[in-house]
Image (tube, rainbow, N blue to C red; front, side, top):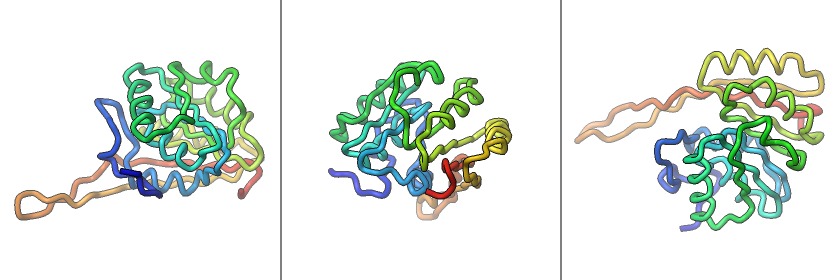
Length: 196
């Protein structure tokens, strides 16, 4: 079944034990990413590749570089790319910032995991991002949000906004319904040169 944009159902992705950005969060992130048909996208800490797939569908003439230091995650990204018939996702097994060497400069960067190298990743991403490009960092840890906001407060040529996202799904339990909250996610959106 062809995925329906703006967001693909979570069940359409193979997941395993690797973290995945949920559908409701992807809708928000993709709205801010504004991926164009020929964009170069970096997905750092790609996990299952759900954002990589969403971006690749929007950039059929572009390339998505999905990187993760976890072998299982990289295998899942490859599998999900195959399942969606995408040949414009390039999987890089390795940790950023070292894994960024030799890649073309990006139009969009997603940072979903840093492996302890957040400051270096943000510095290189901000420097190499094309004018008008979008740098989007997601955080589930308070420390990641704090460190990201400290970094972005020093950026002089970026428009920066941040917000917290809380999604609660209503799920049937027998003949009743239960509220089941997903993990809170904080997003910091940076646009190089101000508004794109």
